[in-house]
Length: 280
Length: 311
Image (cartoon, rainbow over all chains, first blue to last red; front, side, top):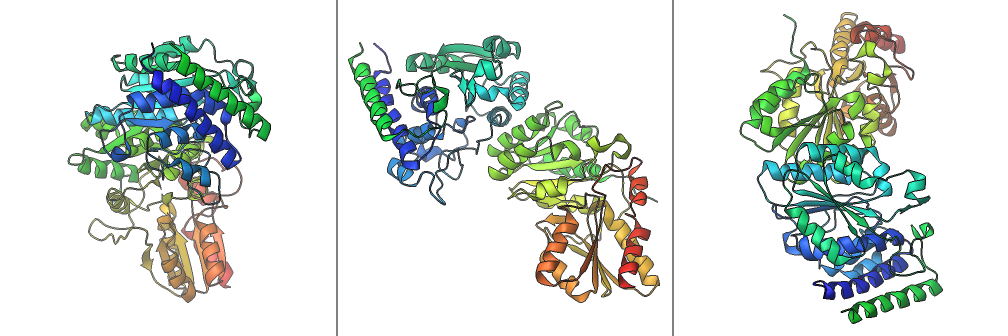
């Protein structure tokens, strides 16, 4: 039986939270939210050493959501971990003057850096990891990027530097859902052979089923043991995961479900939760 | 004897003096340590130095990450590249995320005169000033540069500092360099014309005032090293007393010191404002002195502008 059974069951509640946040705000990058939720949840629940009480602790682990548009998934996880209040997020998301905007905003507790423009997270995390080495602190630094994001040149500047500096306290995740706003990543700008590219840049590469909390959990754990080089976890995921209404459809990159679609997706999430509860 | 210490060297010396006791000071270069006069720092403080290679986006992003973890990063790169190649990192990772990164644009303006437009930074004031939460400084000489750096070491906010490549004639002395952060320095006072300059244009503005004084035209000269936040209080105080205002800057005509001065004066105490700058065109090639002379960005050119307006 999975060691993460309760978390897997709970992940379906968070998918519903994401859906409700998107509906409340009248907008959101729901497709990527669904593919990134699993690594985000596993990271915050099992690995990231930060709590609402330690957001200013110099020894806390750092996380930067480089694919900042997956903010609704991030809100759901931050609320679930006690950093934010879900009712408040839903009431004010996307509203005039609200701090709950469509990308990470570091006026909110627990959010380290603003992002939204792609290709920024990895270089910033290189700086954070370097600071940890300089100060001889044992914190770890994490970032999650999208696969479409990898077309940004700055990602590869950061990849080069992380490897050059031997930053084994840095772990990057690529949400490899193979879709971006215009269609398939391989049609828009080819990313394969992805593993070989990162290996060639000097990274430890772990390629896992991005729908599996167990596989992601094991990968984060394995990354901690690697010395002398950074680790990238290629999380092979499904955009819009959790409901056939959205799954693997590029049109759901940014979309608000209709009332009918909402009910269908909600029912799919409930079925997913029941399946998780019945799983042995 | 003419000064042989460029402002960039003054920056290195100031940082080295403080890095001994403040281990959070970190210098970052993008294969630019020689151009930045930062080789001595890298040799003396290898554990506080980061070489990122020719990668300006990485330079600024890494600096922001260091700052987010309590470091005091100083990111050095030619102003031409630092102000535009990594513009978005300056906007998002530094200004928007509110990180304590000091961006040091070296060889600014037309310092690389004969290398062509790719190496000129004639739009950096406009670009960096347009970013909310970004400060922009163009110190005029090595003594003011030192004072500025010491002041910036004390705060925890981002800033862009542009210095030129070559040594410039002293405006101040080591013992006499009045300085208050974000306040213009009044170099002389007169009520016929107000001359406002920054960076390497302060010296010719001061010399122009000297020439004009011999003709009975009295000028106030402001060293507006703090282009943003512009010291409007001092600016308006002296503009109100003057008949005309002339600005001088090593920058394109749009969005720089002259634009900001004209806006502040237009809103508060309208006067005739003449902006002297580089043209809105590829700059003629030559040494920076030759380029300045070609566009009248010298004492004679500034004096002539004042005369022609007052006539």
